[in-house]
Image (tube, rainbow, N blue to C red; front, side):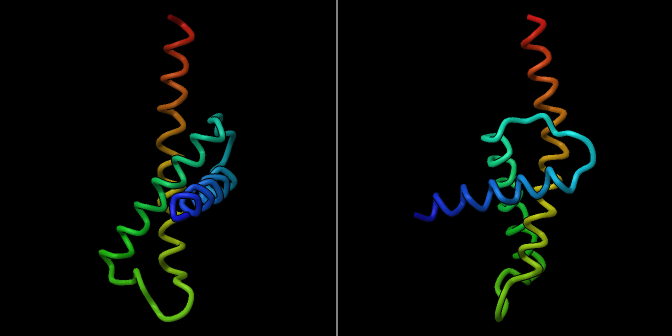
Length: 91
């Protein structure tokens, strides 16, 4: 059940990251979920390093770091995906 929640959270974070970033991110839905999942892992690690991973109540800082990580991963991963897809179409 934890993996199901991780996929759902990854999808939501990936979609939010696509909404935040300007322009169109032409990546498939499965890659959006994967990028969001990787962003949440990155955000959790950053929150742990900064000592705000677990707080009383809602972990707003951790969630903001997760969203920031998802935005970063989507911003970096989208051009990489486009270059991979472009090279396959030419071949």
